Length: 296
Length: 311
Ligand SMILES: Cc1cc2nc3c(=O)[nH]c(=O)nc-3n(C[C@H](O)[C@H](O)[C@H](O)COP(=O)(O)OP(=O)(O)OC[C@H]3O[C@@H](n4cnc5c(N)ncnc54)[C@H](O)[C@@H]3O)c2cc1C
Ligand SMILES: Cc1cc2nc3c(=O)[nH]c(=O)nc-3n(C[C@H](O)[C@H](O)[C@H](O)COP(=O)(O)OP(=O)(O)OC[C@H]3O[C@@H](n4cnc5c(N)ncnc54)[C@H](O)[C@@H]3O)c2cc1C
Image 1 (cartoon, each protein chain N blue to C red):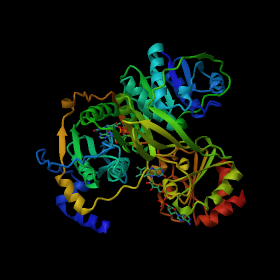
Image 2 (cartoon, helix red, strand yellow; image 1 turned 90 degrees about the vertical axis):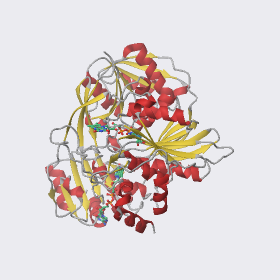
Image 3 (cartoon, rainbow over the protein chains, first blue to last red; image 1 turned 120 degrees about the horizontal axis):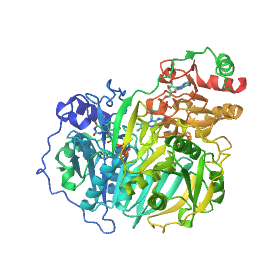
Image 4 (cartoon, each protein chain N blue to C red; image 1 turned 90 degrees about the horizontal axis):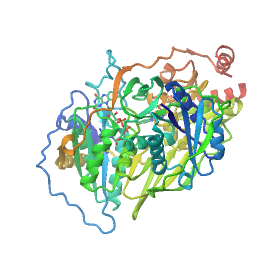
């Protein structure tokens, strides 16, 4: 079912923006006024709002090309998608809501107007509403963390689930920085998240295996690959997502200075490996390794 | 100005990645101090004192650091930076270093520099972006440079020959934000993946966890570590700590043998700096052959047992 729905979707240009189809990005129309009175379910024990930051990045299948002038990598006319770890973060937040452990899921992105597409994807997956902090400036983790802190405080979020790393810059910093700025605990590289009253137990993927920590809520969690398998949005949910509220704010309005602290001097291609040879069989391989490469 | 290196250790011993971080510190230039925060970390501190190039070891032995939780270690590092005036804080880019360094940076209001592979000067570093598809040279104007170091990019400092002093430092009150519950650590007789001289990794082509015994037979003969692709880990063939790649471990052994691995960019990001790469794959079009020094196009279920008996 799901696959058929998606392919139908892709053929319809009106919804292409929801799928980050690549090519010239078209900003989807968003009305800040078009905000339905979304029901915020009254619950007893758990009144937890979850904030999920999602980043728009070059799709992981795109072959990256370094610009000839060394100013960066080619991002014009390449397919953009939600950072894969952030899909996992959205999925986790939506599951917490479905499981009655969270009341509202708010997706947030910091980036250009086109990041609305990324937010619509999060809404189609089940987030309740979205906020775009719109900026064309280069975003670095410290500034993003400061913006997120301001939003967490404004929204009264109790849990923030981020991706463990963005696959463009591979920084692996934002969640840890946000936790530090908020003075909250951090459960990074999570493969399991279990909130209970007043705390959340997080199993973390670490170099030696797995570690489980308990964090006092509110807290920050960053998602690793095996936390869950994100769902595909169904067509009805994609349609519904178009009507969900998406607010756009400026970094200034949150009082945050976005000036980058790191200056990229140049971006270069990594050293290429020399083409190797084919060997005919195992015996030939062993001989090469012993006599030519001298590694065994 | 002096440099503070956050040691990776398990109280009893220093983890090898610490030596690579010390080597990066030496390239930055300056007095090198090593922080060992733990509970009974005296042995690790003694080991750190012997590392070539280290002038002082700071030992913070306190129950608060028993599990080196970042909520408690980060404020300690910040207090040392403020007290001593360190210009750089370096940590290995391991799961522990990546967990704590950004927290330290945010508390100091500086932008951290992740996973450096080169030191151009004291304030300019090289780091891979986009799964290693590009190398960025970045300049930091921040007062304190907080940096994580990719171990495979720096030749380890000698573990012997140094004679640093060991100084005890007082801990900072426990934050109460987090507590350790449990750990499931892999125990293996084999060398550790990131420091092994030879690594043999299996991918989805292995078909099952049981079939990893075929790789282990080769590993036993070569004294190799065993790794895996994400697909093999996701399929449950092997635990997460086997994963090599952009979001797993970065390895650069003398010999890397990729078996039943297609060679996705995210996997290559973790192993393409290996000295010699061997690929065994039945699909001659597999991208892994583009980085392999020696490619063997054949069925792994024949080739791997044959390899084990040929060694
Ligand atoms: C060479 C170079 C060129 C660059 N050029 C540009 C450019 O042209 N334009 C530009 O905008 N930036 C540019 N940047 C900045 C870059 O794209 C990153 O936004 C920034 O460095 C943050 O690092 P990260 O995303 O890897 O953070 P990580 O710490 O790896 O991200 C972890 C998590 O934090 C959250 N997160 C991070 N960023 C955001 C965000 N913006 N919104 C919502 N959630 C977020 C996500 O949940 C993500 O999974 C450039 C950087 C470099 C090195
Ligand atoms: C955000 C993100 C992060 C990622 N991080 C990582 C990472 O850190 N590490 C990682 O590895 N991947 C990572 N990936 C996944 C990566 O994109 C690939 O999906 C993965 O590496 C594929 O694993 P594989 O090569 O084992 O499987 P496949 O691509 O399915 O390849 C299996 C190979 O086995 C061969 N084969 C099958 N049977 C036999 C046989 N009998 N004999 C010989 N050969 C055979 C096939 O020809 C094929 O080439 C990441 C992906 C994303 C999106």
